[in-house]
Image 1 (cartoon, rainbow, N blue to C red):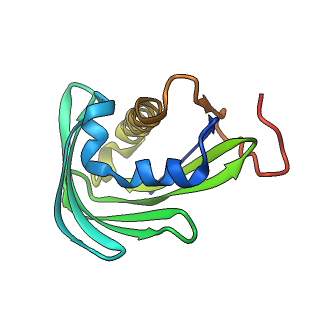
Image 2: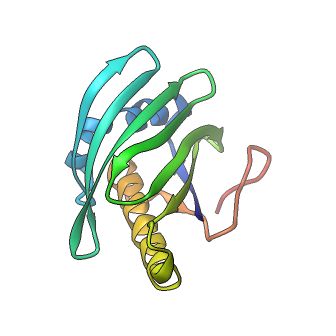
Length: 160
C-alpha cells in the first residue's frame, strides 16, 4: 500500500475558515479542474457519503467514500467504500500557523493490480499529488505554499 502526505501553508486565512471550505466538497469542482464532480448521497451530523469523479491522467477516476468530520480537531477522515481502485483512505487536518493555516493531507491507497504495482503505483501517486495540490490551490489560491515532500512545519516553526 502506498502512502502520500502533502502539507501546505495557507497564509492570511484563519484555520477555522480553511477547515469550513475544505468540508464543502460539493463546491470543489467550482474551484479546481482536477475535480469533475462531488455528489453528497447521505449527510448527517459528523458523517456523509460522497460520490467523486476526478480527472486521472487521461481518464476519470470514480469512487464512493464515507467521510467523518470533526470540527473540534479540524479533521476530515475518509474511507473509500467502492470505486475504481482497491483501497483509498486518509484524512485532512487543519492547524493554525503563522497568521494562516497549515493543511495536512494524508492518504493510503492501493491500485489493486499487484503484478503492475511497481509501474502503476508511482504514476498514481504523482497523479493524486497533482490533484490534491490543484484542489488546495483552487480553493485557497496560488499563493499557497506547498511544502517539499517529507517537510512538515508545526506551530513553532515559520514558513518562508
